[in-house]
Length: 109
Length: 116
Image (tube, rainbow over all chains, first blue to last red; front, side):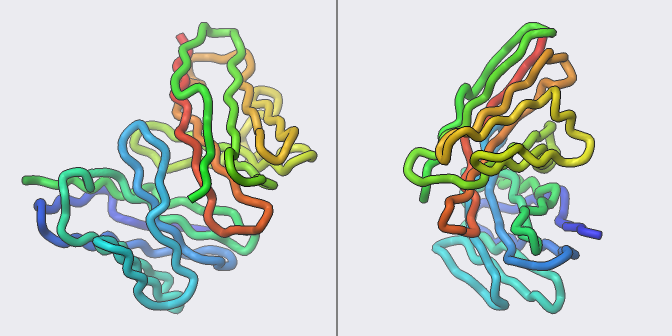
C-alpha cells in the first residue's frame, strides 16, 4: 500500500530551527515534495527531492534518503509567518502525488 | 513559477443548485489538471485527474455525475458541483502540470464552497 507519515503538530520558537520529518511507502517513486499551506489558502511549493541528499534553499532545506523512505524539511531562523501546515507528498510511478496529512507548525515568540 | 488561476475564490450557493469552478493555467499549457478537495485540518484528497480532450479519471468514491469535470483546452479545466448539498461544502483546489512534463504541479488559489 501507499502511506505517508508526518507529525500532526509541532511547536517551535521564533528564531530557532525546526525539523519536520516525513516517512513514506509508495508504489514507485518519482520524487518527494514539500509544500507550505497557510490556513484557507492553497499549498505553495517549497522543494522537490528525487536524489538522496540535502537541498538548501535559503532558510529552508530538504533532505531525502530513498533507501530509508525518509525525508525532512528543515526550517532555520524561524519567523512568525512560518506558522503554517507543511505537507509532504511523494510522486508515484504514475506521476500522481500522494499526500501526507500535513504537519501544523506553531511558532511562538 | 507558473501561474494557475482558480475562480471563484469563495462561493455561497443554495442547496440544490449547481456551481462551476474554473481553473486556468495562465502562462503554460497544462495537459493534465488535478482536482482536490480538502476538509478542515485534513490533507488534500484527489478527486479526479483530467487530461485535455479526454474524459476525466475519477478516484474511487467520487461521484462523476455529481462532480462534472471538463478539460476542453490546454489552459482551462472546470469542475461543476451539481445539485449541491451542505455536505459538499469544502475547499476545492486545482493543480496543473505542463505538457513539458514538469514534475512540479502548480496550484490554483482554491475555492471555498459553502452550500446553505
